[in-house]
Amino acid sequence: MKASIDNFSTASAQYAQFRPDYPAELFEYLYTRVVDFQQAWDCGTGNGQVALALAERFASVQATDLSANQIANATPHPRVHYGVCRAEASPFSAQQFDLITVAQALHWFDFAAFNQEVKRVAKPGALIAVWGYGLLTINTEIDRVVQHFYSWGD
Image (cartoon, rainbow, N blue to C red; front, side, top):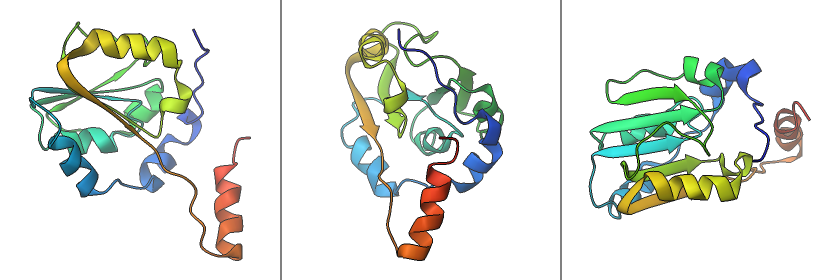
């Protein structure tokens, strides 16, 4: 299995403060494709921003990340249950989830192993939704600052 990399534990509080939010329209679109709203898994949750959005519609959301510090900086919610685990080896039951989300994290996973885990924990007819974003460009001065922070830690 691909080695685990935890790049965000040293700056988890800043990550939670500055990570961009996702548009409500993205979630509304996903909800048109979901059959049941009992259980969702937000894998690679980071600070839990997607998990919190999912909690508005799902009875229960499992939100996991490799980084204990990311989970420690996540915003609590009564329907969100945070945990630390690898995406490829979760503690969940077979056929548990109606929706599985991965926002801006798939590139860290061992794809083949994660694919097998998704097949194991997804209910028949479940939806998996994976998305990310690219770097924005504004102007030379701002782009230089954004690039500095983007490549921080390289």
